[in-house]
Image (tube, rainbow over all chains, first blue to last red):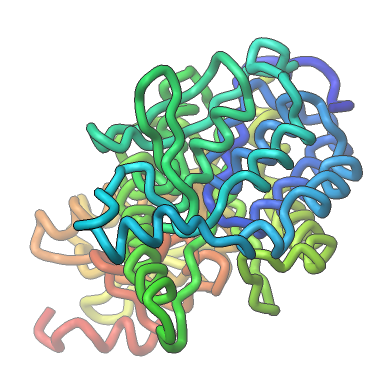
Length: 288
Length: 114
């Protein structure tokens, strides 16, 4: 990233919440911060946001990150079913159920994550990087800050019912949104004074026409309420400044609408521009 | 940020211009607290001129609401801009604060005997 080193005074964190392809709005936000010379002291990502947090942490520029997303996140990812899971769900007497359950064959996503991030580790990040997932057995938030990025991202995007939970060091992890879709608490815990956060509410289905859509609808209801509850708590319980950047999408953005990434980035940039005067003032006040 | 107040019978309308954030929240709390201390506990915040609120702004609003309610009054919001309303919704504030489309309806929401 081309931002100059540390903003004097306050530690600035960027938190990118869950939101699938909408998380690309982080690249628009990054462009604005870069242009203004506002340095980020740490970056936190959850679910889809973990991809962009990792790109930013590694210093991948906005244009390159956009290209990488287009190659990584395509509709083919969900084309192949994970038949062992289907059989275990439908015929548990013949095929005993296993917790490693997901309806989609995850080999392609894993292969693409490997292509994008290789064997890069958290330790190689230029700025402190934190990615969140959820411990399947304890239900607690897991914050990854060391080890292979591919593992942490794969755990963070383990969308319930879609991708199988991911095992790391003997623990099973599912999507980070299940504990906090916009994990500003992680940034607070690690000493951020100013948190610029991108958050998205999950879209609701007009009509649930399949079991999976029905499950998505329930998941959206729960995660949106969780988002609001956690956000309210963090706003009121701490003295950290939290600046929400909430892009307004005029078009509906679906899970694999990668062709809309330029538009998503544009809206992220626009939303960031709106908050810029305040962010500038806040950082200037802390330098006085 | 600019804060102006206007007494309309038993209701005090506080008009706020600018952003409610970490650099301005203390001024807003002081102004609103001053109204409550002076016995003006039926407050309407005219938010038409507020273009942004951060977490500090949310804390300022909540602090005033609590104080006004403890004294038998309330703080009600009027004419909240869409982008500010999104933040209030996201933080669950619309479930604890009464929000009205304009100052007149917010003022009229208080009983005539207030």
